[in-house]
Each structure stands twice: as structure tokens, then as C-alpha cells.
Length: 404
Image 1 (cartoon, rainbow, N blue to C red):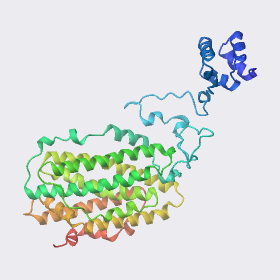
Image 2 (image 1 turned 90 degrees about the horizontal axis):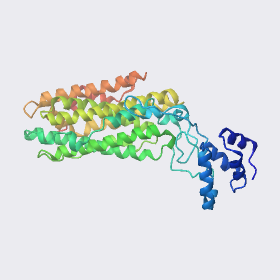
Image 3 (image 1 turned 135 degrees about the horizontal axis):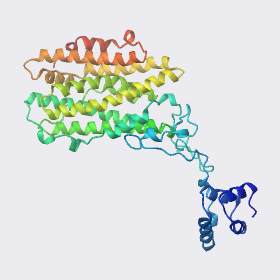
Image 4 (image 1 turned 135 degrees about the vertical axis):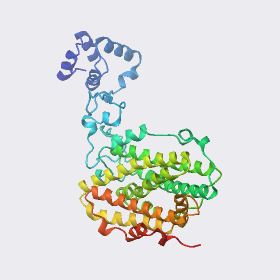
């Protein structure tokens, strides 16, 4: 085998002597294999050792070594940032470019290329970037990883104090409610993971942290229900999930969960973190509120990217918001056990329920204002078209208290 002129030039650059080149040309090696070995920057001694090994085992000569010459950008050196080698630090050069439409149907990672002859399509259905993307996903992912906590050890369970019976039962009912919601979110988001193309891995990585967050929420709220003599309460109404499980597009799911619902969940958690009698309960709900703020931030960023880049965003958005708001409004209006438990807890007992009703009204109003404010930030004037039930609930929560 005679090496090509180009390969000989590369060999000369590697300072391979003529005797080594003659030995290579007399071996079973092909020109393409030699180019690959040159790409590995083998000096004379190492190339000689390779040939010695190949002479002892002919299988070595059959190794194509094509992986040594990938078509990707080489020579990249990711430098650790202030928080270590994060996702942001490795999103450099061509490895940071996420196309508007992902071109591969298989498991080709972002920045790599499929191998000829081994291209087998995967289970993906989402290839359009605007349907899943948000700016700064790498930073959100890193933040989620840094802020992870364990329900078993981060909470001082031994310090949980005895509560009056109605307060304990009310807390346990609220824990049951939000544990149920967390489990539903976990299932819905996880079910979309395999549908989203591999190239959008930053989004998939972040959503995986939310799936874990929701699972931890289920864990810590179930533990709280069983840690102080209360026990789990009754199942919530569940109409909230209609717009989640039936959504045909990932954006509809993310708007319903990470924008509409989170705007109601966060103020509730923050309020509970303020008024719960036990420091343990306040710690639990403060942690959950902080996690949910991160989920809302993702929802806002995705909605912003969707509106700016999807050609039919404004038209589709009307339907997504209508369905998400309707499901939430039905849940808030008809899930009586959750509402009554919240009233009792905010009232501090059964002696001043009128105080609890007023506090719930303020909470519903604050949640609605938070939701409208999020959309206002994105130049989405939703107030004229918002679900009228949400406005009614914000004005008079007593109207939805159903007598037994």
C-alpha cells in the first residue's frame, strides 16, 4: 500500500522517519487508517509500538480508527466557572448552537453527527425548537442541581410540635392536595421527555430536575401528613389535570403547569410559610415555594421564546390560556375540602373563620395579579379575556364554599 501524498505530508509533520513510513506501507494498514492514527498525534515511538502490537495480533490491523477523525469541532477547552464546570461553561463553539429544527430522528447528541449505517430512528416527535426552548436553560439547570435538598434530612422532623386538631387536619389536607398535584405534574412532564428530540438536551435536563422536584414535593408532603398524627386527607377534585393530560403540544403543557398553575401554587406556599404555627411547616413550604419559583421562571422564559419565534404563537396561545385557566378555575371552585382546610389554617382555628375567608380572598387576588403580571411582562394583555371564574373567585371565595 502506497500512502497518499497528503498522508505523507501529515507523516512528515509528525516527524515520522522514512523507515517507519516504509514499514507502514508494507503493513496491511490502509491510508485512511493511517490518517486516523496521525489525527491521534502519535509520535514515532508510539506508532512503532502500535505496529509491534498489530504484528502480534492481526485483529489490530482491522481496527478502522474512524472515531479519531470526527466531523465535530475539536480542540475545545471548557473552563470551570465560579460554580464549577457547569452546563453554561460547556455550551461553547458549535456545541452551543441549537438549530431551529433538529435534523436527526435518532439519539445523535447535540454537537455530534450520526454514524453511517447505524442510523435508527428513535421515539421522538418534537423537532421544532420554539415548542420547547427557553433562553438560559443551562443556567436554570445548574441552579436546580445546586439547590437540591433531601426531604429526609433537610427538614428537622424531630422539632415538629403538637398542633390543635383542626390545624393539624387542615395542614394534612393541604399537604394531600399539593402532593396529588405534584404527582400529576411529575407524570405529565415525564411522559413528554421521550417525545422531545435529543438535540434539545438542555431543556430535557432542566425538565428532569422539575420532575425530581415534584417527586420530592410528593415525598415531603406525605411525610408531613404522617409525621404528627394527622394522616392523609381527601382527594382533590382533579379537574385541574384536564388541560395537562390532554395537551397535544408541549407548550400547552408548560403554560398550564409552569405559568398558570405555578402562579397560584407559589403565593399559597409563601403564605403558608408565613402563617403556619410550626417552624418545621414554615420551612417545608418556604422550600417548596423556592423550587416552584424556578419552575415559573422556566415557564416564563419558554413562553417568551415561543411568542417570539413560533409563527402561530399568538393564535395558539389564546387556546392554551383558555384551557389552562378553565381547568384551574374549576378546581378552585369545586374542590371544597381544599378550600375549607385553607380557610381554617389561615384563620388559625375554627373560632374566626371569617378571617380565614378574607385571607383566602386576598390570596386568590394576589395569585391572579401574579398571573396577569407575568403575562404583562411578556406583552400579553390577558386581563380582558381572562376566565371570568378566576375573577369571581378572587372577589368572593365564599361563593364557592359549598355547604355539606
